[in-house]
Structure formats: structure tokens, C-alpha cells
Length: 251
Image (spheres, rainbow, N blue to C red):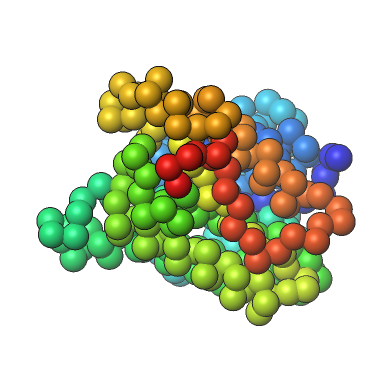
């Protein structure tokens, strides 16, 4: 289904899962707004989106900045007249354990992974409420359930932040429903720039043995679910955290 009038904001949209989601929604005709700090990668993704024949705005911004989120959302509303979709995808890994992590490292992990979701949901929700509808998807992680599986590149701080997204999603599905549908996705081992880390890349064959689907995931696997959660009509799914991991046996 082509959605020529839909406008989607995607944080962390320059590469990886965010890029995959942006391209998938652009293919369906959505105007795309990318928010990231990776300027060159974001410019490349913007070109790919525009080559698909749809509009794309880019904003170089730290997603942890509360006021910037509000300012950008207002700019997007002024430009397009609406905000229909928010994909909270920006994230930061944190492989440091409890005995070594510094306070500022903990704070930054929470700010990027969890506070950013608060920032952007609060920024777009008023516009969605006024229009009478909206869809929000936030990227949690399999780590929120497992605390970090064998393939995890992050440890407790990351798991804590991603678990917070699940609690936020459930609570806001009640608070913002029925006008706004909000869900979380928990990706497992997905082949992105983070997953190309030698810790994972050198063990891919071994790790696949622990996945029922016998392969690692791709950004497209996650983007397909994002498309369903944001564009399907009707949609009776809200307040959920959906695992996308090909079924890892060591959850």
C-alpha cells in the first residue's frame, strides 16, 4: 500500500536498521525525516530516499537533546503539515561491566537509548493527538529480555535502557491510545555496522548454530515489521514488544 501523505521521522536513520526502515517506508511513498549525527552517512541515505521519488529532510542532532527534538518536530510539522510516524531507532552500545563503568558512561547510555525515546515521543505526540492518529515504534533489544546473550556487544547498562523502552511502550500505549499505537521491537543478532564488530563477525558461523532460522538477521527483517506496525490498516497491535531474532535458543 502506497502512503503518499504519510510523514515518518526516524532517529538514528543514517545507517543500519534506521536506514533500512527509512528506505522501506520511502518505498511505500512516505516522506522521510532523518535525525542523526553521522553527517556523511545521512547524506548518502537521503540521496537513496530521494532517488525513490519521495521527500527527505535531514537534521544533524543529538537525540538526547530534549529541546532539539521539540524544535525539529515543530519544523517538520510546519513543512509537511503533519507527523504520522515516529521510529525511535537511535542507540548506543555499552560493553562495559558494572565494576568498570563510569557514571558518565552510564548516563550517556541511558540518554541515547532511553531518554531519547521520551524526548521524541513527547515532541511528536501533540501533533499526532491533534490529527487523531499516529504510529510509534521504538527499538528495544533482545538484551532487554536476556540481559545479554552470547552474541551481545553490550552489557547491563544497555540492557537496562532497552528494558526501560518496553516499560515505557506499555504505559504509553494506555496513555496515548486509542489515537496513537505504540510498540517496541526487540532485534536479536542483526548484521549492521555494530554487528560487524570482530567479536561477532569472526564468530558468525558459530553463532548461527544457535539460531533456529540458521542465519543472522538483516535491517530489512526489522524494517518489514516496522512497515506493518506503522502502515497496516487496520492495526490491532499496540503496547507490544516483538522479538525479531530468528529464534535464538539461548535467549
